[in-house]
Length: 133
Image (cartoon, rainbow, N blue to C red; front, side):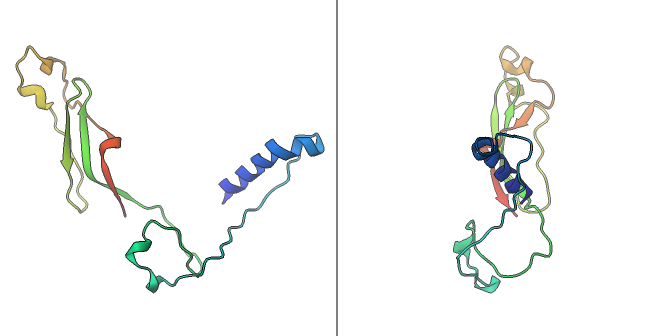
């Protein structure tokens, strides 16, 4: 909520305050309150088609945490020769490890192999698939 309140204060200052008061020092404080006319739904009434939608649930928030993101498919790219490969990940607590050497290392020495250092792969986030948990 502090981000919304700061944004409201900035919008007021930029659009209205200078034209009304002529001063820029004393911008009033704002409090943002979210209100919805939507009927509240009980937690037991939630279904799978509501995933990813904003819904109204009655109650008091006792704690909050950030959602964790887990990759299900990672695409790696060599920083020297631009070779890419994808790696599917299994569910669980395991992580992903990139190859230590570029796959072009098996190519003849006259090609791009000589340019690829040890541990050349970097993650290409735009081509990866993720799952929110």
